[in-house]
Length: 344
Image (cartoon, rainbow, N blue to C red; front, side, top):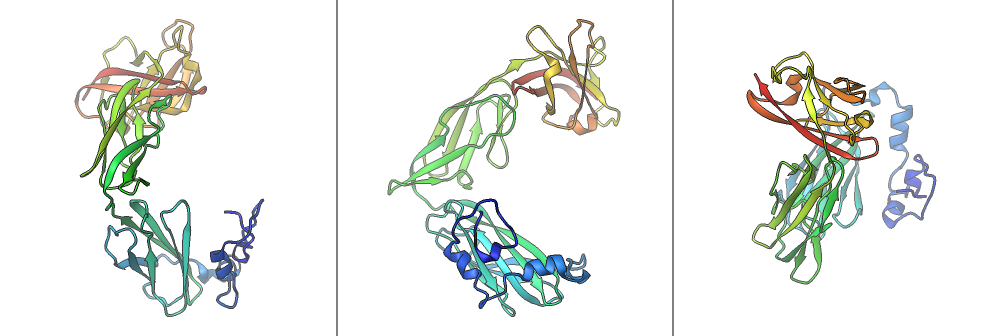
């Protein structure tokens, strides 16, 4: 965030706004010298580097994990084999992008992390930049989760109808309505479950995003444990493609652990310009890393996209497998197809 606070004088911005009360407090040189980090990193002797043999540590001492909204947690900052000279500990409050910072003076090792009563459920990161008495600087972080103790009467999805034309994972926001009428973002709550009715079209990633894997539609259902649920329809729009495995005139057989690349192909047609496939936007069986080249492989005078990849990188298991092939053109059109192959 651009600011004119003295503490950020070493990091000039192209635009500025008045310093916040927190920035004013930490820019007071009667409390501490805001230039120590810059001097250590740019002008200190070689011992200012973080040494491999010991790393700073940050650990939670109390408060529980997950932490109830509004409660506090104590964390300790240490550096085995060293004396901590000073340290800054930062964390987000869970309200918008507000960030908190505490300074630990020499001899201090514990700081209290305070959460707001309406802190968004889910994980947040506590980070510390630490300077040892010998001039060494290091960084440590930990993740604390905030418990979802709310009682919800309704749940809402944003957007209510989602149409995508790319296989890039999409954010999926879920809000729960509390008894007092306010809405809380529960997208990262451990009480939330997201289910796709058709995983051939879209699946839910570990971080709660929706990832298109084929063309079509799927009903998505969001449920809060011991609370309400809601469903929406997600549409994945694109063009169906014809795919194959080179050479085209032979049965499609793949040795799963082979180091020798196999070549998948997206065939150009009257409606599909395979020459416009974006090499950075190709997934085979959900995996990236294919080397893309263009040539006419079937003699129809149209450009085809050849996708070379090592079988071991595809995560295939033996048997007759349907392998999805997804791509996107440089214009952003999603292309989706599959081929059936014998995996040995």
